[in-house]
Image 1 (spheres, helix red, strand yellow):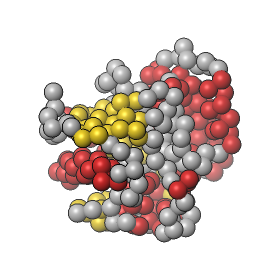
Image 2 (cartoon, helix red, strand yellow):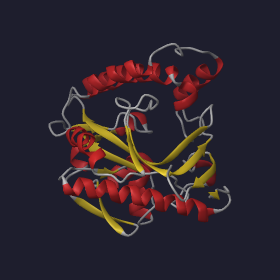
Image 3 (cartoon, helix red, strand yellow):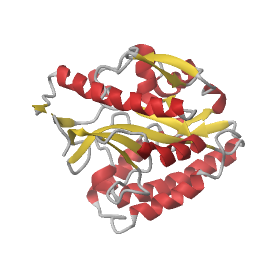
Image 4 (cartoon, helix red, strand yellow):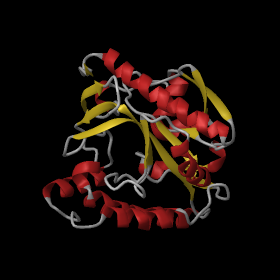
Length: 285
């Protein structure tokens, strides 16, 4: 068993290689079953700027159009090795995130980004991508109403799910987090019932039939609403030693989130989890 030292990038690199194995498994399933997916967020940025992982990054983000996401959920458990597990809130009692994860049980990560320390397995995040109204005002109202429900969800599982360390949060999010820290507002609400409510609303508009689409649970809030044409179809990019799918129009996509994305951020603006320890196990129990 190896233990992570936050100053030792070689252990972080080992974690990235476990995540790369998860990513290869995921991509292989998608290619076998002709499912569409895209690298998104920091994973797409890493592909363009570093041809792989951002050196300080510790996770992977993937987006799938809703219909492909649903098909993936139906088949994944028959396609993965025994040391991997697919997590989704509808099937796992203890899992409270809306998006899904593919995890490697051979790796345990101690994450201090939240109020409570979380012990999790190495993961890749898989987000559903949904459509939005074509009209700008209706799109804003749709997103705003959904955001109010999402705030209720975050209050309901504040200690476990809210990342207190994410840099660059807008003022209103910082205010909401302060309220969550100072009060017990919403702690008696059922997180999964709120997620079910969001799930129904998010599927109102088709990804394929919408001019604008979104990753509603992405980190960049309203910036996550993007022209569907930016995603395109079958654009491939180098990521470490494999080729993966990503948005065809990567330049406007990355500028939407990162501005001058070719310039690495300063240390205080590097978005990462507060990982205190990583344990790599030789075997899975």
